[in-house]
Image (tube, rainbow, N blue to C red; front, side, top):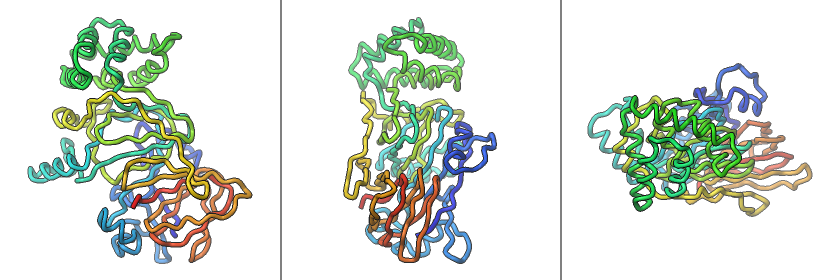
Amino acid sequence: MDRLANTVRPYAWGSTTAIPGLLGTPVTGEPQAELWMGAHPGAPSRVDRGDGPRPLTDVIAADPERELGAPAVRAFGPRLPFLLKLLAAAAPLSLQVHPDRARAEAGFAAEEARGIPLDAPHRTYKDPHHKPELLCALTPFDGLCGFRDPVRTADLFAALDVDALKPYVDLLHAHPASDALREVLTAVLTADRAAIAETVAQASAAAERLAGEDGPYRDDCAAYAFVARHYPGDPGVLAAMLLNHVRLQPGEALHLDAGVPHAYLDGFGVEIMAGSDNVLRCGLTPKHVDVPELLRVVRFEPTVPAVLRSEAGPDEEEVYDAPVDEFRLSRRVRAADAPPVRLDAPAPQILLCTAGTARLQGGDGELELARGESAFVPAGERVELRGECTLFRATVAV
C-alpha cells in the first residue's frame, strides 16, 4: 500500500481554484485542470517504498504479476489498464469522440505502417487501445453528450431564427436520423472556416438571446452560449448544438462509450478512463481535426444521456456500473461511527479520499489519506478502511 504523489496538468481550460481547494494548496492564479493518479507514461504517479520516489510505471514493470495480479496481466498485459483523475473544468474542453477497440487497433497499425511519428500534430492514433470514460460529479457539472433527436434539433435551429441555419433545418427533417446527423455534421466540419464564421456568430448571438428567455431551450442555449464565448467563430459551436446538454448533480455520473461525441463544459469531478490517448476532435480546439476518420468513428445515433446513480453493493459500497473491463469505480460515504470494512481485491486498486480522513490499515501498517490524497494498493493486498470520509475506489473489473 503506497501513498501516491501525483502530477497536476495545467491545461488552459482548467479551474484555478477547484483542485487547490480540495488539496489545501495555495491558489496560484494558473489553471489546474487535472490531477492524474495511476501509471500513465505521460505523468505517472510516484511512490516511495523506502528507496526514494519512483514512478509507478517502474514499480509495475519490475514485477507486473505482483502489482497487478495474474488475471489483470492476462487480460491487459503488464500495465495498469485505467487512469484515475480529478478533473476541474472552468471552460469547455474540445468536442471529441473516442474509437472502439477494433478501430483503435486498425488505425494505430495503419499510422505505424506509414511511419507517422507519435508526436506528429496530424497523428490520430497514439496507441492501439479504446478509451471508454466515466465521470462522477463532485460539484454540479455541465457537459454535452450524444446527439439529440434531429427533429428536436431542427426545432431548436428554427427557434434560433438564423437564415443560414435553414438548410440544416431542412436536412434534419428530410432524412432518417442517422443520415441527417451525418450530413449536417459533415457540412459544418467541411465548410470554409471564414465563410461559416458569420453563421456561427449569428447562431451564438441567438443562443445568448434564448438563454435569457423563459422557454424550452433556455438551459441548452445557455450551455451553447457558454461554448461560443470561449470559441467565437469556431464551427464546433454549431456541432455542439447537435448534442444533448446534461447537468450532473454531486454523486451522479456519466459513462461515455466509443463513438459518442461529447465535451465537458464546467465543473469538478472524479474521472476514470481506460488507459489510452486516442482522441478524435470535432471542434473547439486549435488541434488537428481529421474529418474523414472522425466520420468513420462517430456513431450517428440519437441518444438520451444515461445519468448513472450509484447502486448499493456489499458493505454500503456504491458502484457506478459501466460495461467496461478495464475499470470499475465505486464510492463510500462513511459516518464517524461506521464499522471497519475490508477493501481486499484480486486486482490493483487506487483509493482516493475526497472528504474527511480515510484510515487504511494494511499488512505493513496504517496510512491516512486526507482530502485529495490517494493510495495504490497492489493486487491481493489486505487493506481495511476506517474513519469518517468519502472514498472513491478504482480497480479492474476482472
